[in-house]
Length: 206
Length: 206
DNA sequence: GTCTATAATGGGATAGAC
DNA sequence: GTCTATCCCATTATAGAC
Image 1 (tube, helix red, strand yellow):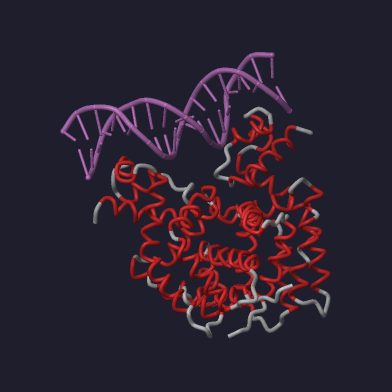
Image 2: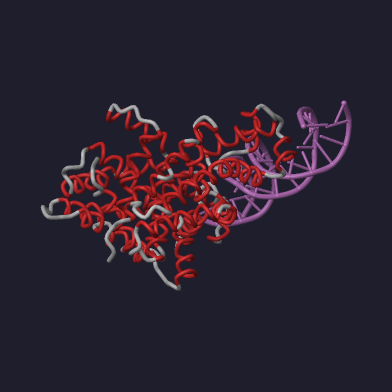
């Protein structure tokens, strides 16, 4: 367990809960039990640390996701439900990569869209363009009537649904337990949301 | 134009763009062209200022929204699309209340869910419970097969779609302009999103 | 590579003159 | 009600000893 990895782990957990702006280097180094100066020594700046935390996940996720999306994209009979379901296994496998990996990653993604004026959005779309392209292609094949413009909007709505749901997933799972006596996992949440977004994307055109 | 209102206006514009955490009192008073100490004199603290900014909108919006939701909720033949459409006029009328009112308010709502560890969510749900109740009732009537548990999930997904879309609406409208030569307003965005969320809430049950 | 100490900046809040 | 000046605290980042 190197200092660099201790920092990455601690930063990830704190960023997921409190956001990037809301987490200080002091909190990170304190949780990681390393010296305050270590962040700047190993990463150069807080911004670079944020990128490093996200890259660690994206480098793990991107190959699996690209493969799954290429597969479903080349299947003539794939439905929209199938396309969205292609995300499930790659995302869940992040739990093997790190404890709460799936939940953490999705929460970080949500933070990236609202914190820090979109620099993370820029980073992800420029660094991992294939994931997006393959996804768009697969949706296009499953629902050819959707114009590029309508697809743009609906995919953004979908991104919002996912990201927001996941960034408040802890609270949601708590409520489900209290109000409905349901002991759910992040996995069940993903199963709940897929019919919703598939129906949304497939909504009738005006 | 009182000092208090100058502060509220400036705070609102900055909060919408940069979030609550991302906006300093110095930026607010500088934009408002008032003295730094004025915020604490008039509002007591930054947190109270945030509440005041939100209350100004909620006090304007809540009566209109409650009325629209009660109306659509008492209509035997109202569809889910009708229920969601009930939000449109009350939301758009915020543009008469203040320039960019609709967009600003929705962005602030989005910020409230991700910034500042949910204190704003608590504030809104406890201060304006009727809006939520009437809305749930109207959805229940339009789609009675939906169990309370499924409704809970789907309404939360819907909240996520709206809030996320609106909190990145500036970026989205920019992209629409660049990629599709479309000069859209927040109004068009709302029209785009309603079919999506209505279809999502109405998705087939397992 | 790790530490202490500290620089440099910016934050929210307040005291007290006017 | 408004202003200046300032307090006190937290932040990121770095210099320099070990």
